[in-house]
Length: 338
Image (cartoon, rainbow, N blue to C red):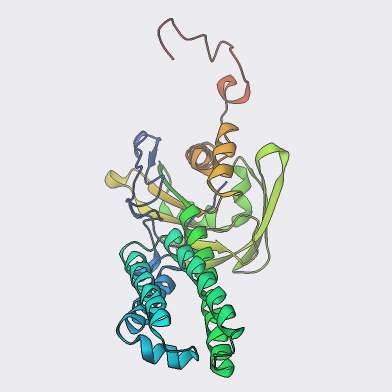
């Protein structure tokens, strides 16, 4: 399945794997995992992953709120309409310390789990405010406003947590192949998106809607089918095509293919990158891998097929690729080998 990210490919991230050579007809693997911080390494124009900028803002908000609760608990108590006594001030200071620690954790490493911890803290705050509302010693109008404000912050925390969780589950892979054709020829072939099923094993059909939008249909694990609409987000003739799935896709994904003259006039280097969310997250990706129906495994085969289509006019297959089990093209391994 050819899906990928909307920026040019570059190497980076943890779990880097190398296979073969870009020349001589093989494919070259780039990053097949996520960066050391648990997210795809490539981002357009240095932008941050979904939810991370949002999390940074929440982190600073958490530190600011915590400092106010620790330094000025009397003022905070009056602001939210609760009684100003030693017990309430102690509770506010404890909540402030929690907010500060949460904010520091989010700013130092904005993983989803730290923002989810804020959601748990919001639930605690709401429970305390609910208890305060039931007290006769509370200024209910102020406490009601404070409760509404905490509900709003909780909604933001949940939204940010969901975005970070999705970002952490994204998978990235890069592959390259050298094709003995000019960049113009390879670009023109790819730019006609309806050509993609000719060399992409799991892509059943691509229907062009207009100059930018298209509808994709692909086979998925266990005999299922997935469909999505995609739009081209960048098109530089003979250099780059970048696209992404529109909102509501079965498998959120984006992609790019870059065309560069190969050294020594050996044709064109084609660099493809994938950035996608597997159905069911990492569990879904692991299950798909067992059936060899996961884009990380497919992309190298697809690029080899593209090379064959453009150089010979057809995809060449052997018994080893179309038949399962042992046969003359796949003999029983010698003793002591795997």
